[in-house]
Length: 586
Image 1: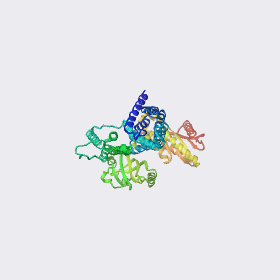
Image 2 (image 1 turned 90 degrees about the vertical axis):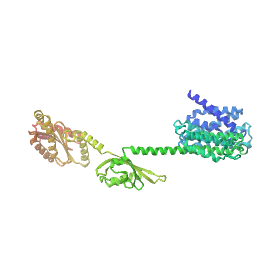
Image 3 (image 1 turned 90 degrees about the horizontal axis):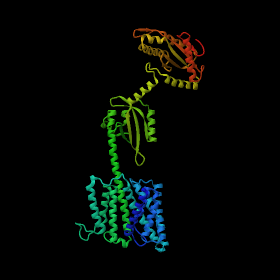
Image 4 (image 1 turned 60 degrees about the vertical axis):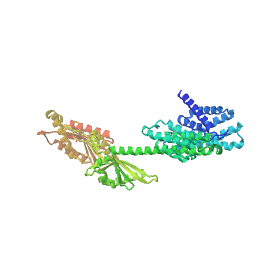
């Protein structure tokens, strides 16, 4: 149903516009200088798609019937109108990528070129030939009729299609209350001056016999375009066009003799200038207002942003900073203007770091990462920084913008969370997950370099009686003390881990012989056998150790760890305070 209603509306609008063109734009019985329906048809297709081609055909055929034209002409006119409209629609969709809101001058130019100047050739060929075949013109008249028909369609599209598109854009506001008086004054002046210029009305204050020229019209057009928006400008254009047509038709005003002497050729040129200049000025003014609004918005965002923003020129000197920059760095705006951001340098980054940064800025135009800088008070902080390069129309660097935030605290919190996820909460030793990760790394290095390494599982003897007799608090202190003694017996490259309860594991990196591991196992047993003094209590424990070595006892992680665990249980079974190698007793 909506499609039928819209189709009927299109047909009615087409017929009404055709009536205006037939009455006011007819140069002769066979040609016109102005054809508004072409612009309405193209706008309908751009807004609604090719489904509106049938209504365009029907409307064109009814137009021909409205003037009692022969059937051959009616068919040729209808087909020419449809093909012209479809050609404009296809070219604009295929090659133009036109924004139907007409927010850019490029959109207006493409609309006239691809939607008007080129497609109008189609109807300018087909329709005059239909006239010739209907014996409505002679062959000698054909070139002139083609020329007139092309001009009529171009003007109709250039003038009416933008108007329809602008009013179809719901985002555009026509009436702005704060400019009501200005718009009223503009309309009053436009009506009065238009009547005087185009219809010959005498205005008060103008000497008798003196007529206002076209130079009075264009300031009004500039006023409308720059101050009142595209919709109001379109209506002012329509007002002037109506006055021009009425004056030419009544043979009054500026174009009073243009109808007879020039076939409205001067009118066509003026109407094209009116269509292009008015809408172009309105588009430029809209772009300027949007740009100014965007500048104001960016300034507001910069002022209230919690992220520091610094802008440098092509030489790297600071030209502006936002308030957050002062909060984060401690430097006031006046203290850094004209200076290089190197004043924030902490010295923690290498020259290679900055070389890679500048390489990315030069080759890609942007860089994102983290680096350490230093505040005015000398405190270093970690910042997340993004740098973007702005270039001028010649491709040269104009500015660079740095946007940064202080992530020192958040990074510390992340590191703390990551540390807790991989370490035992009580002893701060690596937990089972981190131990396995380091085991995998050591296994890969050993396979790659043909090296040996060993794993020692440690289980504490007599730990449960300590917990039962002295309490869990003393038990926890004992586990912490055991962790410290185990760490004191190994190298920094080795890993001591707590798996849980009273179970520990030691990863020995790159050992040379089994004797090296055996010697260390004896030292560990001796260290564990020494008394622990905890809150005035003397605690005596011992340990049972299970040992496995790569590659002698396996080549994969699960195999080696399983054999070390089994060896530990054999050592415990053998009476505790001893160690056992995988597959044998020691």
